[in-house]
Figure 1 (cartoon, one colour):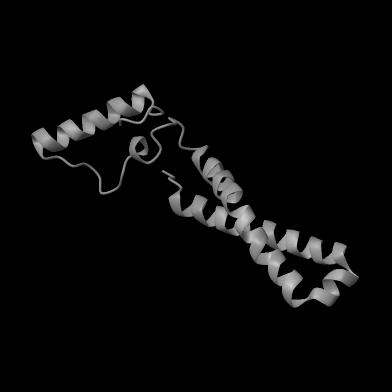
Figure 2: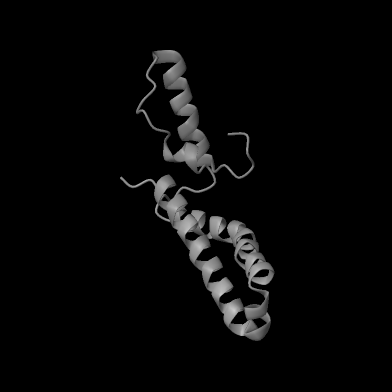
Length: 113
């Protein structure tokens, strides 16, 4: 709640939930409300897309290294013989792996009601 990016509506919802829990002992549902999982946004439907994009951008350089470095080190002859083909394969593998992890995180952290 102390984050600068928390919206006023989400801060109010979280304060209400905290007061219910502390005063009445009512802890509500067994899952974290939307205001707690993404306090910077009031729209649940866009969150899976933003999570996908964030994970994709975050993992792209890591998967890029994991696909490109072995191609250069262990398939050196093929790499220097057909660099375009090897770079395309490494790029496609990087995109595929980053998209898979992004989709996994978006599905796992998605909140559908």
